[in-house]
Length: 193
Image 1 (cartoon, helix red, strand yellow):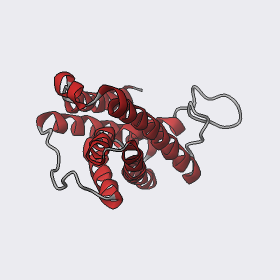
Image 2 (spheres, helix red, strand yellow):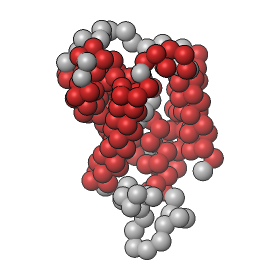
Image 3 (cartoon, one colour):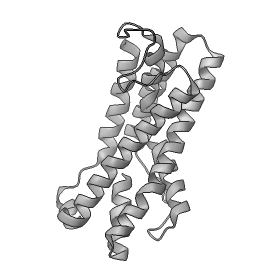
């Protein structure tokens, strides 16, 4: 949802450049949140037997998705006049509150421990990134963040220059329930695979 914040800032400053300036701090906060979740998984790998991690991550995803369905509130600590630091903190909190990093945990758990789709000397995920080292974790988080940044930039610029917020007032629907469902689905799939 960072694209919406970027559009709002662009409209306030009447500048497409403000939309673009907002996106990098939003991506940094998102990456920090995802990195925290993946770091906690790495600590879990060092502390728990490997066979139990898919159950823990799947259970956490399902539980968090149910929590978001029951209580879909957002923190309301910041207004619309923010600086880059505020955007990083806001993005970190929103990505953490929505469980963005949690969605990647099944990939990290199954990416290493499921050798079935692997061919050749080492196992890599679909992007060719080895998920068995800190460098692989960093590469995967970076790839995820770049994809999020590209999609956010595209949506923000299309809304700012073409669609406008008036369209959003007529066509808006609450993505929190969709996101909660995606968390639950990812958890269930992580448990079944």
